[in-house]
Image (cartoon, rainbow, N blue to C red):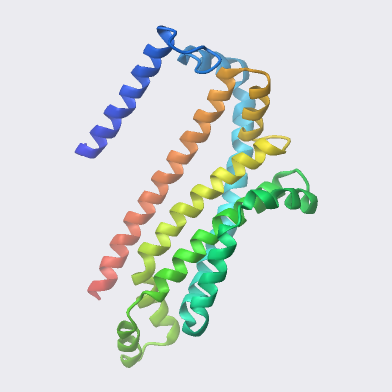
Length: 251
């Protein structure tokens, strides 16, 4: 096991120990921070309901990712390749990204209702812009001498884009995927907390109004574990494409 991994596990164990200590010594009220036993009691009482809520939230996040990823990469790549409009497109996308997406959520509810569709739409809007902006920026920053060299060697425009431009822009693209995916997950859970009939966000909001702190923290813990899992998968994706990029550079 690597040293960074050991440090991460040590920090995690220290935080868990601190949690046990703080709650056992009653330095905070249980309504503010329940003891670990409170989460276990919540799981025993409503574990199946939380699993159903998690399944719904995970499905909404997955659908939003499947839409936002190709949409953001595709539009970012197209505008980044069009040098005449890339700067204007970057400015427009950046301006739209600066608008808080939360103010549009009531419109999404009016358009598609309070069901999963509005959560998916909200997640797509939140994740699309950082993915598109990072992809556009990565494509724009590719040295044109590589493109010229590829064209001189007889490669088509599509081959040059796939084998040269895309490989060189990968760090920016993956950075955008990290930011965009995090925003998708946050947006889906937050939208469930605002207005929904199910999902982890709904469970957190419902039990918050009932002052069931153990249930609230159980929902937060499940959401946190989901974020960590997706982040780990993105790290694996980044590692894979880094090797792919290195192999491409050797060709």
